[in-house]
Length: 173
Image (cartoon, rainbow, N blue to C red; front, side, top):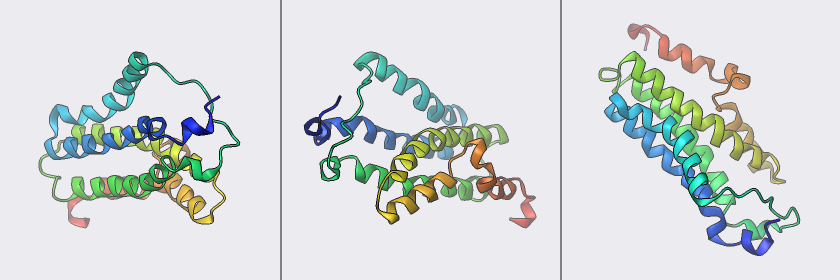
């Protein structure tokens, strides 16, 4: 079991903060197109698995009796992910249907949003799950808000209008 003292240290939370490094990969893929759209799903699946293999997988559970104030390095991450995910998802929808529409092919767009779906469906769902366990109503609201934009089949109705907007004829955009 991971002690409360170990949980209170920055070193314990740093592996989770690495998830924010996926956001620039999505932006690079959108801006450059081509093979760079593969960076996001490859990094999300294989780079993190490789890091686990190289550095060791932590299979311990945190002490459930850890006071909330000892989790000061974890709480900001779960809170910052919600607006980051929202801005990434809808910013990229805006970009590929507007300014970036000319340079991304249909395949590049599909692969780019596949990668976005990978991170919202893995990272977003985990952080929103953690926020759901919080007592604070604001944090639970953020969990519900984030959960709605996770790109997995269960929540497809929440994002179906995004897909409709992306597939609308050019004249109606």
